Image: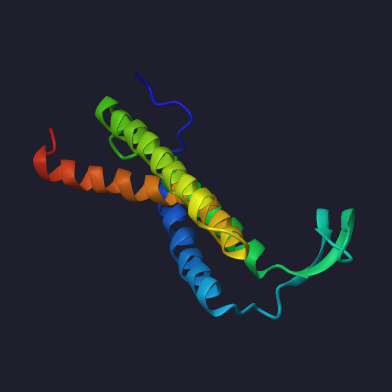
Amino acid sequence: MAPKFLLPNKFKKFGWIILIPATIVGLILAYNEFSLAWIWGKVFAIANEGTEEHYKYFVVTRTNLTNTVVGTLFIIGALLVSFSKEKNEDEFIAELRLSSLLWAVGISYVLLLIAFVMVYGTPFMDVMVYNMFTVLILFIIRFNYLMHSNSKIVPDEK
């Protein structure tokens, strides 16, 4: 069975090149609350903060784009890593890919359910931001763990 919707293997390397620095900068941003002064710009916003009672809709606003750039690079890198073929993509790897994806989605939503019940106020918004990335992170970790553990068990068939 031919794998569908997967990018060529060479995209995986580019994904890691983007994902690793974006993860490092993202963690620094999450825990140190700094922003790069030179990443400011005018952007079109569907919704933006306005006065205390109202939001502004469909406006052009000037904002710091640090979080936007880092988050976008993280997502692009993680998608390239997640959805690129392995060098020897076969049905076993496709099964590992599917089981890893199902596992990641399940764990992500269990964590979200726990957050709905146990986290309130502003910290809940932090949980929601982190939850945007959870499925991709868990998938990458689980899939690579299974690939690594199965490479030790089953020697390469040549």
